[in-house]
Length: 61
Image (tube, rainbow, N blue to C red; front, side, top):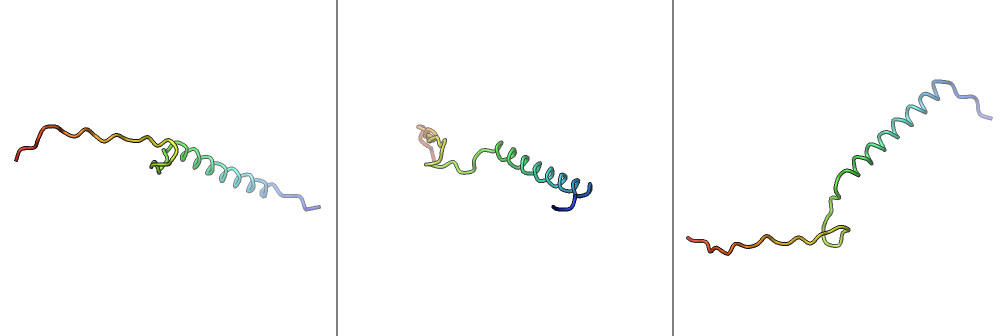
């Protein structure tokens, strides 16, 4: 049987667990709020964009 852990060891273990857990949660929450970087053909949710209408007025020089 292993020796009993002291109060300081438990505080360090719990503190590190809370620290890493909060960093992990914040990182994933922050990533979930941002749109995907790659929105090209073949990716999920890609919408084919229509080109802007060309002007019918001829340019004068």
